Image (cartoon, rainbow, N blue to C red; front, side):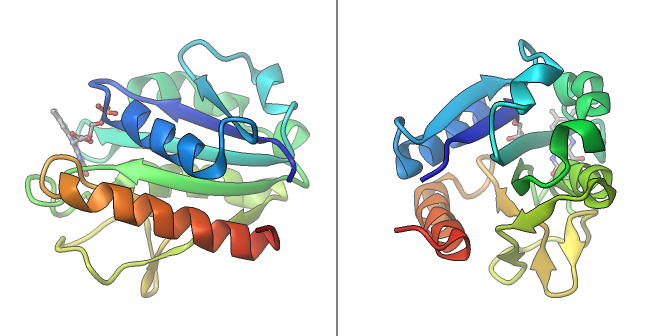
Length: 170
Ligand SMILES: Cc1cc2nc3c(=O)[nH]c(=O)nc-3n(C[C@H](O)[C@H](O)[C@H](O)COP(=O)(O)O)c2cc1C
């Protein structure tokens, strides 16, 4: 299958950990990991399929390195690509802003001519509101290492299987 670039921004390590699980589920020969804190916009060009992962900070804001890198997400860089999103958050403490960062990334990439895959059911979480909500779905995979770390492996595995199906690969 085509090479996948997993681009992540992480402050305390939770999003890195999730990115590594996602890489492992696709296979390290298929998916490369890229820290947006060290990435250049040109790195995005190497991949037809991108997986973008951010945590949420500052009550509804993007993770800090993503806030610096998000301007690199342009139609020149992303147009025609397939993109999936994942987001880390804390649904108890930030119940009105759960994984908002993922929603902010979605709003950013939506007008850029990308195909978004990996929408994920909202059901199964316990929060009040999120910028990542899209009807009865979330714009990507939400993970909560603060309250439900035991669900992360299973969620990642199911999500990666779903994306493979959407991409038509085994
Ligand atoms: C000051 C602060 C603000 C936060 N704001 C939010 C928030 O608005 N929404 C949310 O879902 N999680 C929020 N979180 C939780 C983090 O997103 C969560 O712990 C995440 O797993 C951190 O991932 P990282 O270590 O990869 O950055 C916040 C955490 C802190 C300490």
